[in-house]
Length: 241
Image 1 (spheres, rainbow, N blue to C red):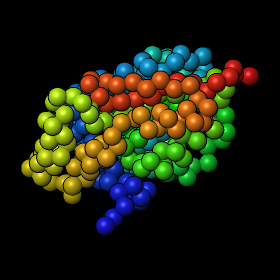
Image 2: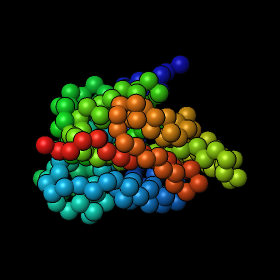
Image 3: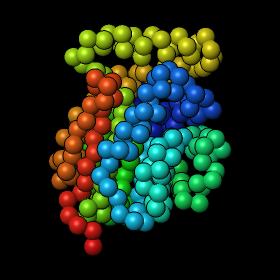
């Protein structure tokens, strides 16, 4: 059986999904993914003028308009993603007029050689689910390393809303409805259905919140819409030089 967290496997899934990912995620989440991206940006602590930072597991870059709307004077966003297809889709579909402020690194985030203390901010929307717990620990260490003292972060991910009375219906949507939509309308190779599998396996952002705290970061854990999404936001302790 394939390791669904192997970087080559993840790249293949999202390269094949890239052309229809934006529409699929928006419709099948009933618009909540867009709302949650806005909330993820709103949860990020304030940035100074001319900030530079990373969008990790950047995908199609759908968070960039929200980020640049709140922080209009951001100097640069470096998008890091393993899928070349997703980035091509981002620039062609959404962000050509922002390209002068957006750089791209096509790489496995955990294998990328991002410089220490090189970022005023780190953001990530809906990329955490593609990592297992051991990879989350490595990601937490990377975020702590690349943030400057006083640097901030915010991340969000679709989650398993344990304790919510509508949880069985939500899980049915992920495990049955999404694969059915793919088979009937998208004729895919079960790639979009993998998004549901990743989300169910992920659980919540509570685990990575604890890992970020272990790295010495200040962390706030947040639930969105009864726990259907969860997130973390905070900062690296210290003042920028």
